[in-house]
Length: 89
Image 1 (cartoon, rainbow, N blue to C red):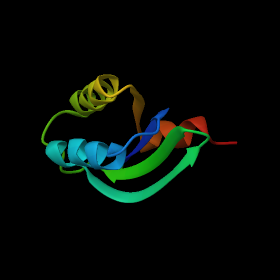
Image 2: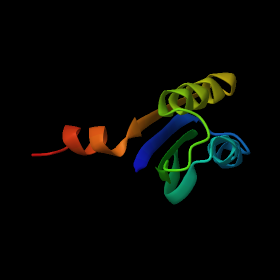
Image 3: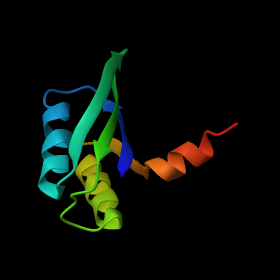
């Protein structure tokens, strides 16, 4: 089971470290990551393995969103099944 984590916000030092630590605290393992800075805006998409979450998936979604709010970031977590269904032609 996987999830897609997207992060958008003003660029600052330590964003990847904070989001990675948040994932690790919940038992999510980062499988792939892509990030860039576009004119002072940080954007990142991660694929995470959620098979070993230590909290519910909904709890993980809420915790990551709260982590983002604390740092002025917009963090969304979407289950891979939902993501794939939304992007099927």
